[in-house]
Length: 171
Ligand SMILES: [Zn+2]
Ligand SMILES: [Zn+2]
Image (cartoon, rainbow, N blue to C red):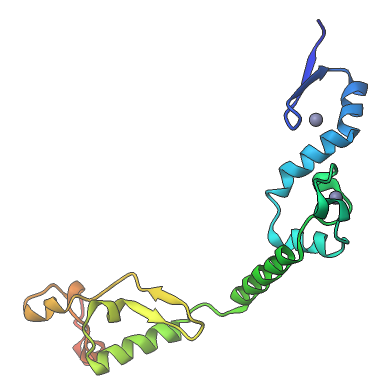
């Protein structure tokens, strides 16, 4: 028995002769299965682009179409195309929105300090103008205000802490 070639897509074993493999790879059954396999990894933008240029497959509407994903007509219903369009548009919208800026965080910090909002939720969450929720990696626990001998690293900062005259020169 000669060498064997196994096609993963078709789950079929062939004689490992170049001409046999080539014939198999050019066959429509093989190409359909390869296409089916990669269709699931395509992003919606690619599918939408491909399907928008095709006319609906009349065979597929009434029954099964033997060409599957290699059919030159579209197997997507108008509703599915609309869903893809909606998804792609929403995704684009998200990409063009600006991420939260340092200014937003600074603004939040200043507002919290002046209005004395001390709930944990308000200290660590920012809702920006793009509708994003940002959870800040830190949250000041107001319970620390009850202690007067806290190490500087967990003390709440006051504006006076940034006053130049208060900076201690290290030896
Ligand atoms: Zn194959
Ligand atoms: Zn078709």
